[in-house]
Image (tube, rainbow, N blue to C red; front, side, top):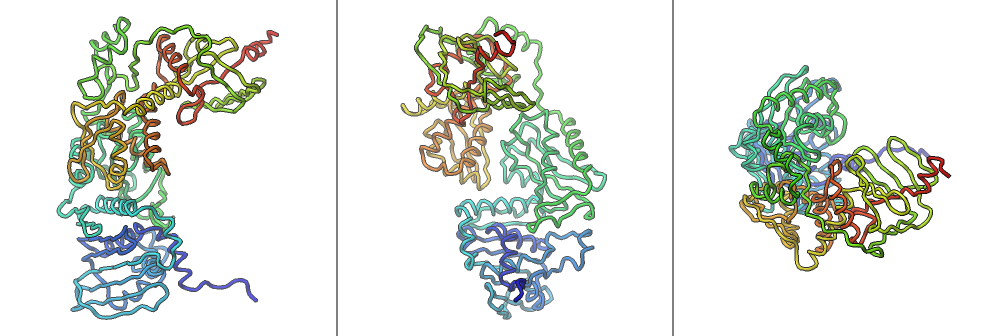
Length: 628
């Protein structure tokens, strides 16, 4: 008996659906793309229960005939191409002919359609492996597709979906992408009968970006309209004054096709390399109009990934964006004027806490002057004298292997007998448990403006200044929160925040814990809020701190109860407040940090679990120089 056999049509379609239809947003994507290919001017999407119960897409496009609608639900049936050579001239969004066949294999589907030359339309009903039912019906010109009970015959698929709000948020972001790629089309999205998106009458990118991201976007927009060697690029980027803490506001389209292309993202980030600090990203909407033969759209069934056949496009794009940014007069430049330089030079007579007091209030939460000139300037308080407590603060360094990461290197604690150095790591291993009395140690200097060098009775101790300070701040915040809450720093000028639907869901999810921890946020309009207060001590821009905190909480999977959220908040805040690597510290500042660290409950690791200290013993140093 033959071991090889053909799959039945339903099984083959369901396997294809696993590649094309992952969730309700996948259905919306495929159906809206078909509507756009049909020449529609208006698209309405309705969803109930995140799209699982009901998902309807209505357009006023060209419609289909009776013969076409019967053929459309068959696998590999398409009106976009006839042979493989057509892929080099492809102008449509869809072309595989798998969407409707995949959808009908995992849901109950009704298609109502009518051509403008017909007096009446047709209605096709199909579900799973059932035979389609066709009947005449009165319906407007265009096509309406109703998808209900999604994954009714593949319940295992539902286990991989997330909450209803999250699935709705994905659909909202998808509709936002479609509206940005086709501003001339009117899009509406209704969720459980309530309208959550409507771009009717909004036909320009600046207006759309203001609708989605708030009023302050328009002031920062830079128009891009330049020629490439194999096409052109058009759209908008933002000045460095407007930025986000993630790449979600970076939108790329090729021939009005929404794409995920890492090389395009890297090209934009390279253009902003010297204008935005690490971890901040611009907003951009860029459409590359390229010769269809210069791209490969047949890379993945979802049609989101494309392959550029001309690698020079990425470099050209970077150069164009750099030139556009240089032309603008509003690019922020942190220049030390002579008067400011004198002020900085005179700081020897002042403590840094005095500088902080003098420069704090003009921007509400973060002062100008020195702090604006130096991004990572850290304001230290005047340290208290180090009391002699010989038996206080003992650190136990066990035989565990630990790693200290920096921007370019990693230092790993492995064996004292063997020190192996490569470009990436130094390995030193502790065989025995050792103790360290911080009070008997002496700071002798700073290495690479990142590590504090401390001399102790048993050898040389290297302390990562960022993670050490992070541990000190974390325990201080934890103590404040336990005693009654963190201190709030009220902003003189509240900061307007405009969220996507997914971001707003996260804000509403975490609003009560955030208030308890010193953040005050006030509803200001549709997906708009005012940030009125942040925890005291945060020196980052308020909106950057809030967005990065929101992303951190969302990425902390499983952290949903109040205690977990509180802990994640404190960890994130302590990281943001801590002195950064590559920051020059004075001897007094390093001694103060060492003193604070000696009073921390956990000396060995930061809240993230990274090591704070490792030791090079006297014996190891002497042995290296053959002194015994």
